[in-house]
Image (cartoon, rainbow, N blue to C red; front, top):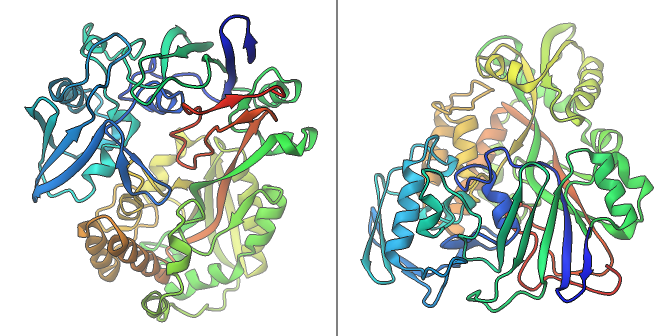
Length: 480
């Protein structure tokens, strides 16, 4: 699959987990594939801490509470030869705001984008939005040339600005990308990328084992034992497995009973038995993929917020329902171990396990006393506040715990209104402490993804946000 093709230089073979679901539309989650192939680019990118850095935009300024001005990079050319201008960028972003369904990053967000100069872009937000630069980093807001939109859709083939041009799309089988010699950052080291979609985990592991693929997404934990350990690299994910407790009704409406569930947990066993040690025990809602979180838990203010946490009550035969879903293979196994741990503490547990599409509505309606969920904690903007608000705010759209707590809401609101930077991170951690103080959510573990790489591969990204993979500087040596 990978390797050198005579006269063309090195080409990298990539085995990806999922085929496109929306024809590689940049307005869908398929946009993350375009970003991982370095073919479509955004105005802004995020660093490891989640701060905004220049990409197609070189600078930005909040000139009024709802008005931002961005300066674009000069001398950028799309793969079809069109020059990047403020008019072109404004048109691309406006198309995203008008898409149906709207890109997730713009759900509930109002943007008016216009050109005020050849390379000067103005963005006016409906509400004050301190995270606009981070929002513009979402791959769903990639900037494509005007020709991408000519037939009513959004076709990325030949219309990006990245180091690699998408030259062939083979439905749900694969894609081909060639080096774009006119890339503003200089030509890529590789001649191109050959992508295969390999949904079957055993087949992806085999592609890595045999050398058929140079880079492999999401190697299953159960396949690692049959692979050379040097080929497998662990990447912490901003995804936490959490036990949500129903605070609105039933036994867990009592904080002391929730505390008894907290005291019953053995996270180490979950990590060891279900994830074979390839996960991180959770000490909070935000894990190692949010690098600034752990150190802030030592702050005095964080401890003060947790100080009033309820003491566990004795439980003897308290019946509870525990729900989860089958779509993530590990979760039913986690639920089995949780049942054992909770029953050892005195609870009587009845499990209910279904496919996610058939259980989500009941979970959101509070039909279960407890629910196990694998949840992304840093959504499209790279900022955890949106996750905390949706899951734990009184008006949260994903509030499985049915939590409505005035102190939690006050701290969530403060975090949401704080500009990006250290002050926002401090406010976010106080909000996390407030949520943990209610025991409405008991974080269990933080997931890792396993990425396969042949020995000769150098310079591929190991990105917790899954936005980057093949980079302009990626190379494939003699061992690939």
